[in-house]
Length: 327
Image (cartoon, rainbow, N blue to C red; front, top):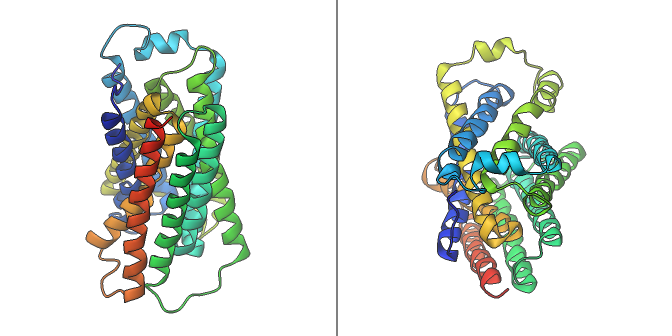
């Protein structure tokens, strides 16, 4: 099993996870006239398939107890349940986040949801696995939360007018953020308690939990969407071929980032790895600036918020990385 043996390699994998988590949504931007609930089926299949592929390659480089299949045979059954449950929790959080973005806009939904997720995920994971300097980790999380807020203000400044934000949309953001932060402690438990699961095994069963839970969460939101009209399965089969390919690609990108984050966590601890991985909004903002020209013609205030956002994310990464070496 390939795992990092130095902080520099682990840090590179954590940064790669942030890049993947902040980039997968570009695949949905490339699909026209295709509902997200339908796109999400291919996305969920994609995250599972890439996790299996990485488990049988990077996770099986040796035939010792840590290799994927040997680890699966030896691990406690309870840890499989924790991992599957973590995947199901993530999946619900992700679907709610997309709905919140539709209802409240990126400027509100992303800062509220990801900010809450960052704090909940790091604090709960650190409580289960106190690895790293707590003060530096807290400082890094604080900088990341500030960066997420600045990211929202930057997007908000793109428009001089802002409509009223409904109570329903704010509640959706809050629930999404709490759930998005709660999948990390499920994974932490499975990676640290009893005969634990290795990072590649976690990746496979976590994404399997997400895929299987689509039969509950995604089916429900297809029939009772928070935004838009109900959709039928027939729409999936009539969907564009490019939509299916991009859905699988989006899932593969997110799944790769997740496995990399879990593998890095094997070295640094889940709290530190999760904190750096949640730099994803910075990556998403970069795509918005460079690829989608979302800030073209933006006012000075928006550009200032954007610059400060990048600065605080860099500080967050440096503090969290230092938290490991100072532990």
